[in-house]
Length: 193
Image 1 (cartoon, rainbow, N blue to C red):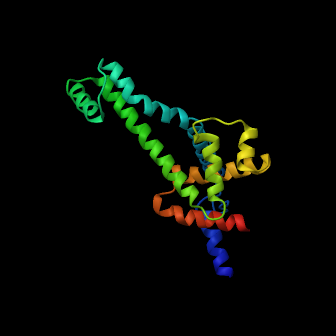
Image 2: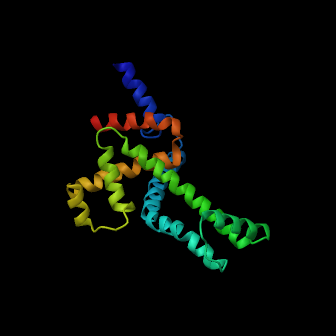
Image 3: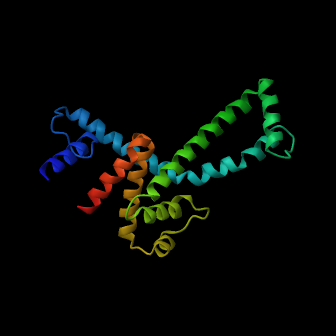
């Protein structure tokens, strides 16, 4: 039992969850704390803008059609026309496509992190529902409606939201895909303590 506890404490220390007493430099410790705070903040900011990013991606084909002064019959025609325009050196269109590609990759990464969150044992489905209703659903709900739909108290809502955003930030900014399962196990163990 003691060796398992020591291994668990070493794992949490390596991941930066527990303070590493071997690091004497306070600046390094503060930089690590700042990085974790920024990860959380960046994840929350990304979630707050998710609806707008998704909307912009949805409007992209119509916007391009207006810029090129031609309505599009379908995706194939759009892609063909865009290839021609880019071949003729349309840097503005090329820049827009690169921006859309990056936005799409970011949304795909968020969706992947959400699917991992949803699979978390015990309360993963509840945390996913909370994040979905708060940040992703087409209609933005007021706080009272959120609490009613989730059937939880305000205090429980904020606690669950913080846990969910922390898990998402770990998935989005620091943990390679292969480590996510072990992180979920660690988080589950911490919740059960």
